[in-house]
Image 1 (tube, rainbow, N blue to C red):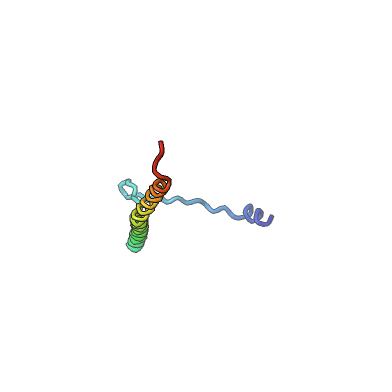
Image 2 (cartoon, rainbow, N blue to C red; image 1 turned 90 degrees about the vertical axis):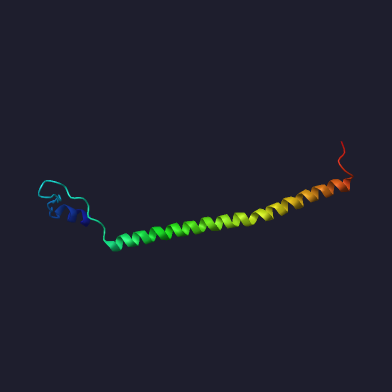
Length: 93
């Protein structure tokens, strides 16, 4: 319970608000971030986009590499079915 006593007995600091205003009554806008922060933010965004593009390219490459394999498997299945039909003596109706 010591933390409660400390919070109760802690002296209250006055809250000071600072309003940035020019002499003619206009409010000032937020200050621009330092150049180093802007460069770092831009570098991080470029890095993330590059990784995303690389993953998309890798996914597309794998998908395109699987097309001939899928066609070969389909052809082998078709030939296996035709072979079974031929071995039974053709299609009987």
